[in-house]
Amino acid sequence: MKIKNPFKAVGLDSGSWGERVAARYVRKQLGFKILGRNVRVGDHDEVDLICRDRDTLVFVEVKTRSSERHGRPMDSVDARKRRALSRAAVRYVKKLKNPRVYIRFDVVEIIGKSDLAEVELHYINDAFQLEGGYDFYW
Image (cartoon, rainbow, N blue to C red; front, side, top):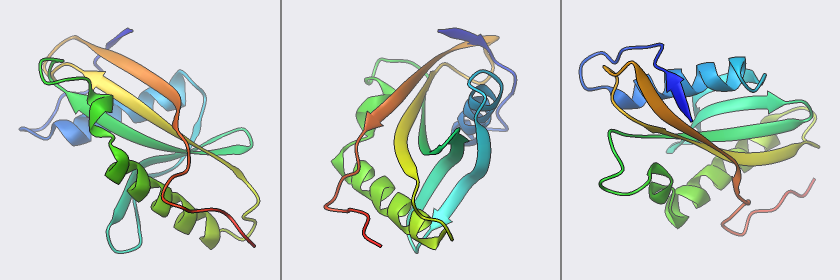
């Protein structure tokens, strides 16, 4: 879907611009509560957005591309990235006082440039399942 571009990127920082566009979209259009942005979990893992959608924790990966010439943004959420997001989610949930929650992994694709009036945004709900041999045991 085409949406208005509410933000302009500073320099070539399209990743931060895309994350701001995605955060605004999930908050205003989907009604999610944002619990964290660029949340570092452990030494190497980072989650772009952690949101709450009613009784579900949603771990959102944001991917931005200027065009689809080099493939869809979702294509870069490969097995290695899915395992890293799964590992981060497990660590995050284990730090909570009440870890009995539902989790979901969503992806936001943003196609366009920061200087355009409109960009294309695709929200992929439940983009993948928990990977990497992780499971929740308490």
